[in-house]
Amino acid sequence: MEDKNKYFELIVKLLNVSSLLKNKMMDALGEDVKKYGIKKSEFLVLFNLSHKGPKNMSSLEKMVDIKMGSLTSVIDNLIEKELVERIPDANDRRVINISLANRGLELLKEVRKDIDSKIVKKIQGLSEEDFGLFVKTIDNLGSLVRKL
Image 1: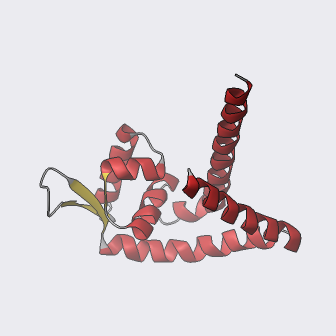
Image 2 (image 1 turned 90 degrees about the vertical axis):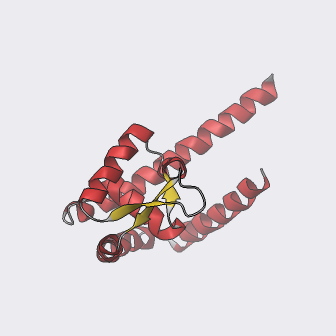
């Protein structure tokens, strides 16, 4: 039973760190996304689509960690703003993929300029030792997670 508690505590720590990292990054976005007329959740969808390509709603829900009902509203808002579009899957007409529209790609380039510099400043605020530890920890965590 003791081993189960140890593993449960590990899972809780991983979830807490994941949530903390996401919150720190989302806080770094702050007012930057608002001045472009989008919300943080909308930016998160745009960002993921730009890195992962078109995705169906289920895949997108897992990537951005937004409940399906809320995600539908976010996607509807992005479609209204002409930043994303719904594209029927070529292989299965029952599947609808969400894809970045040209306007979304352009907006994302502009927003990223502001955000990248802000995040870089936060990371540059770390000491050399902390920066090295941060990079090594992320690399190690990635390697371990791939082994699961």
